[in-house]
Structure formats: structure tokens, C-alpha cells
Image 1 (tube, rainbow, N blue to C red):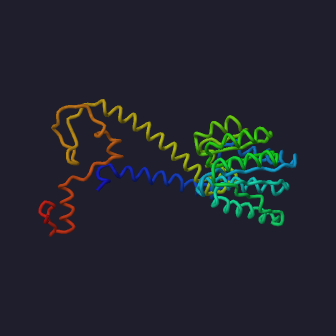
Image 2 (spheres, one colour):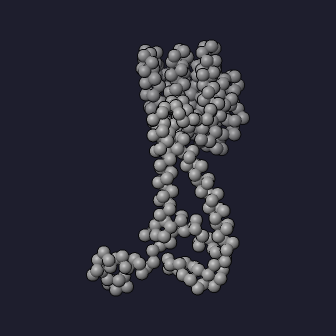
Image 3 (tube, rainbow, N blue to C red):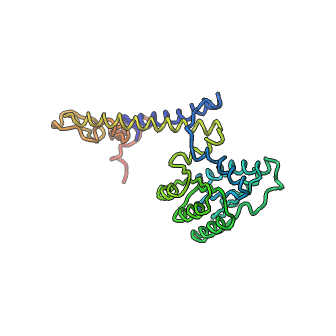
Amino acid sequence: MQYYGLGWVKIAITLTFAFFILFNIWRSKKSSGSLFIRRISGLNAIDDAVGRATEMGRPVLMVPGLGGLNAIAVQALNVFAHVTNICCKFGTPIRVCCGEPAVYAVAQEVIRDVYVKEQQADKFHPEFVQFLSNQQFAFAAGVAGMIHREKVAATFLLGEFFAESLIFAESANAEGAIQIAGTTRTTQTPFFIAACDYVLIGDEYYAASAYLSREPVLVGSLVGQDWVKIGSVALVLVGSILNSFQMSQKVTTEWKDGVLTEGAPEHYRTKAESTMDLIFDPQKMPKSEIEAVTREKDPNAKKPEEAPK
């Protein structure tokens, strides 16, 4: 009933957007490397950061924030796996500090798997991944202390950060470390920009895995989502222009009980009578038509007003 009238357009738009993503995944699988992803400076600096740490013989620190085990944390761990892979090849020591037990358990397995795949399982040590505390400022103090004690040469701060973000950034900055940071918390991004060398802003954070791995499904999804964004902007522009034009017109029709009727007093078209509003807030099927459909399915059905109370 809710898709009566122009409501079907909403379904068509949804299916079109889904097609954009699936089509680009197919394109990416068909010809690997054919889809372009914009250069992300922060991720390009990973090799430089690890190289500097290797030359100085100092560790690389990675912090996945204080958030739980969600898509944001998984994204951070995917980047950390790539960083660990590079560190493993050059024998660079690493430190991963976690503030959530679930994230700690997954991070330990992810880092261990990297060493196993590189056939260096004997070089993995449990202290590479440490659980400090799930209390915000106890965790902040622990990470800051490690930065100063270990004299880290590079830090990767990716995940959900809160008031402790500037403590981490300034502590690492005081040690002269190269810092690459990114967070989905827009309130903390300015602090990272002020104190870090490279910052992943906005969608760059979610594009990190696709950019580093070039996995066809991830790349295709990323490009497909860009198409969806372009389509959404175009829809907003077309809708704004169409609404402005329609609402400047005088009409003698109105919607009454789900039916467009003639003979109403002349008036400017209202927002509820515009095409875009009818698409995204479709009219309900008139009561008379509901009764007709009901009787067609069951000829013996009583009208609603005849039903027993």
C-alpha cells in the first residue's frame, strides 16, 4: 500500500544504486587494476615511516583507538596488517596498544598471521600486541608512557579516538615520530591535523583497505559508492529545481483521501503536492480501492464498517 502512486520510483532508485556497486565489482574483477582510486597521501607515507623507524632501530607504534570491535576497528587492523607486513620484511620492531579486550584478541591473531605468512613465526612475540586498559585516561597514560620509553619513530593512530587523541599526538610529536592518523570522530580530526604529519579525512579512512590491497571487491565497492554519491547529488539538484518550478505554479487540484481531485480553489502548489514529495512520501491507496482489492480476493469479505466490534 505504501508504494501506491509514485512510490515505485523509490524502489527503482534503490535498485539503480545497488546496480552501480555490483556493476563496478564486476568491472574490477573482469579487468584488475582498471578502476582508478585517488592517491591517498597518508597511506603512501607508510613506507617512508617504516623506513625511518628501520634506519633508527626504533619501534613502530600502532593504536586502534578505544572503540569496540566494529567496522571502524576492523578497518584499522587491516591497515595495521599491511604495516606489520612491511615491518616484518625489514625486521622493524612493532607495538600495538589496545584498549578493548575484543579488539586485543583479534589484533593479536591478525599480527601473528602476518608473521606466519611471511614465514617468520619465530620472530613474533606476544608483547608485540598489548592490552593496557579499558579506562580512557589509564589507556592514554599507558600509550603516552610507551611512546616516551620506547622512543618510537613512527605512529599509526587509526580508529575511534576521544579526548586522548591530542595526548597521543603530542607525545609522539615530542619524540619526533612520523605520525599517520585517521578517525571517524570529526571532533578529534582537527587535533590530529594540528599535531600529525598525515591525516586520513572523511571517506579516506574507509577507502584505506581498498587502496592498500587493491582487492577487486573492495575497489569495485568503493567506485560504486562514488557513483551512488554522484547520483544522490544529481537527484538533490534535479529535485530542488523541480520543486522550485512546481511550487511557483497555481493549480486547482488537491489530494484528498489519497485521490487527486479537481475543482479546488486556485492556490500555489504545496510541498505535499510536488512530484518529489509524492515520490519519497507516496500517497496511501484510497479506502475505496482497498475495499475493492479486498473483495476481489475474498468476495464474501465484509466491509470494514460492517465488521463486528
